[in-house]
Image: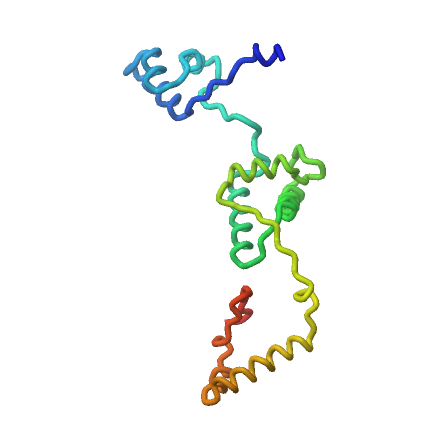
Length: 191
């Protein structure tokens, strides 16, 4: 408990504000104290950066395993899969990352190049535009589809059209684009 009381708190400041404050001091437009106060950055940190004791630009946290371009491609891939009706799960995404790392052959902190929950959590924070949902399991009646059930469905549609549209049902059936199943995703296999 005592170590928590004496622990130093990390002061948070905007890196862009620090960069502007450094520029203002170096150009001679402001004093060190004035720049620190005007841009809301700690004076001691500003002095450390100006004298070279610490780096001007510091990135917090670990370096990402994938490059920004690779992460962007992975986000695009996941979004595309979601758009076409095949959303990928966390497990599938991590296996995709493992495949990329195995092909590339780079060293990683992951066991067998397979990222874990912590990597995935960080990936989600870096890319909030992505959402992951658990796919819904198929119901028993949807999993037990047989050829006979499919043929009966088509016979039922044909009978319905013949009964309700006796004059035009043949024209409707000539163009299959006019029949739309609204409760499923449609994937045309030819143009």
